[in-house]
Structures are given as structure tokens and as C-alpha cells.
Image 1 (cartoon, rainbow, N blue to C red):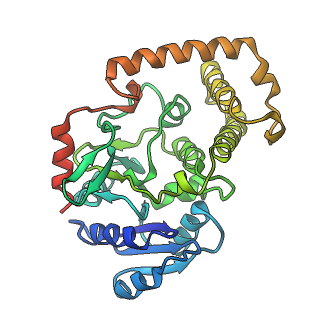
Image 2 (cartoon, rainbow, N blue to C red; image 1 turned 135 degrees about the vertical axis):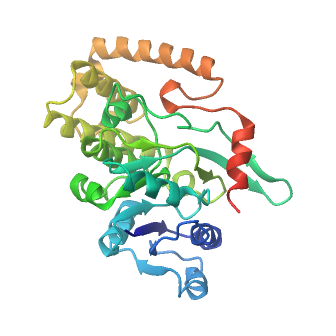
Image 3 (cartoon, rainbow, N blue to C red; image 1 turned 60 degrees about the horizontal axis):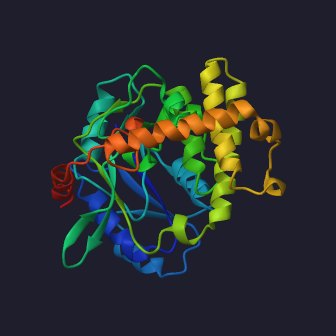
Length: 322
């Protein structure tokens, strides 16, 4: 069995090198690393020359990270797929641990914790947020149900069996940066109970060149989030596996998202959801519940995010980067 690592990149040539070195140093080497360039202008050709014998470089056949991941996936040959970002890192045991989990399980997806961190040249790695998904989801709900309740897992922390992506479908190319929300919802419909390990982790590297922060405006991010939830609603309407409460939670998400988008920019008619008294009451109750959970977790996150605030655990992950 083989692993394909697929990395979209745009203007992160210097950051990409550390990411590639990290993946090439994994205890279980991937069979191929595919870097899909989305019209970079920062001298990525130099990186390509340096890694030409170890990494496959391609040009994006579309525009944006969703199209780049699709380009990489369609060109890949691995039985397992690791979507990764050009600026992040993983503990050196991640691929091996998740590969072994999936090889010995009927599950088609494995996930692990992730944590935001920034690297200081003088002081080393500094933790920027709590560790998320150190604890797994409860199996009282399916993963797609957890997602509409606020789960925000990143695809970098996941390893997928190829057939899962083939069954769930490729990435949408008309969303950014919330393309992962809609993609993972469809993944959860096919694989409702992914397996978990908190031994490996992904370091969600913070820096000054993040596309989400610099290439999209606050307004466009809000529009994409609203559209992502609208696409999810359309998908849910075709499926009878969702409860009355699932539908109400999704409507609250739509209400929250639409609050930040001028009505003239709505691409879907959600006026009924927006003006529903029931949804507005539910929104206020949800805000109160989440505020209570954040007080309990001593973080900006709620119970379902599986938080871990132990700085020693962060250091254990950092020690497994090199």
C-alpha cells in the first residue's frame, strides 16, 4: 500500500522547503509527494530544482486550493491520500501511525490533533492556541453531524483511503477558504466514524503570508462560509439521515453566517431562515452554551473540539518534528 501527499502552493517557496523536508523525513516515507503550483510568482522554480528527484511538481489545472488538490489527486497513484498545506508540519510518526491504524481497521479515515504555533529563530516554537482534537469525537453522533455542530478539523490532520475521496467526490472549486467545511461534510457522510490517535499531530504553522489572512477579505470569507452552509443544506435535503435537531442547528449556522453578508450578496434564498424567530432564539441559546463551554475549557473552543491545554504535550509534539 502507498501514500500520496498532495500539497497546493502559492507564493510560499521558502516555507515549502521546510514542509517538504518534514515529509521526506517521515518514519514511513510516502510513495510520492505532489506539489501543485497555483500560479506562484516567488521563484518556486528554485525549489523545484532543489527537490526535482524527490518531489513531483505540477501546475494547477484550475484556480485556487480546491482545484489544486483535485489536480494532485487525479494525478496521484497512492492507496492513501494525505492532503497537506505548504506551510505546515507533522510529527515524524504521523503517516506511519495513521497508515497502520487504517490498515488494521475498516475505517476509511484517520485523524489526529493539530495546534497553531509560530517559530521564532531565537526562542524556537511558541504555542499560539490550545491543542485541538486531542480527544476524539463521541460516537453518539456521526462525523457529519458533529461538523454542523461546529467541528473544525483541518484536512492536514487526516489520512484518507483513496476510495473514500472517490465516493465522497472531489473538492469544490468555487469556495475559498471554506472549501474544507463542505468537503469534510461529504467525507463524513461516507465515513461517519473516523478513527483517532493523539500520538501524532500537525503543527498549524502561523506566519505573515497565510492566504486565508492576506488573499481574501473579511467580506469574501463570510460569503464563502454562507455558501458552504447553503451547499451543505442542499446536500442534507437529499438525505433522510438527519434529525429535526440537525436541521435546526444548520439553520442557526446559516443565520450566523448571513449576519455578516449584505442581503444583496446572498447567492441563495435564505430569507425564511434569517427572519425565523425560532432560529433567532436558538442562536441566542447556542451563544450562551458556547460561552459557558469556553469558560470551562479555558480557551476559545468548546467541548467537541477535544481541547488539551497542557504545554508539556505541545513540547512533546515539537520534539517529534526533528
